[in-house]
Image (cartoon, rainbow, N blue to C red; front, side, top):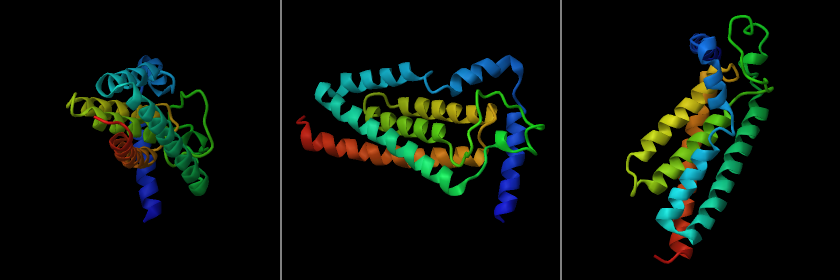
Length: 189
């Protein structure tokens, strides 16, 4: 059963990956770059500051730093634990796929880009929902685009992405609850 699931995962990867074209490669390489969305993160922190104040911003920065560290490190634990090679590291696939990423890491299950972007989207979206009720949907869409970029450039299977997004959503929600608790405890309204 697992073998069949992995076979379907490979087939879906090849289909999605081969939808790409050289016309769009530069855009997807920009999207998949970790530094591209620093302005978005800065904007989200600014919105949190505007709505919650400077003291709360300190809590947000600490909680977000813990959240990203947590999701990133758990992702690495899973990668080392499962040792599932990335598609770009599979000799049998490299001739059937488009590999345009800068490099190919060793293991890919599950995607750190997906988990981190989803955690940030859920956290910021939930914190800011009382003020910007549609922002969470924009952030979830952004996270899905970042996740898909990993398939496009050839470094993750769809299952890596889905598991990363799921873990990120759970992490984002847990750290949202932590931030709310800390705000209620240390910041007087």
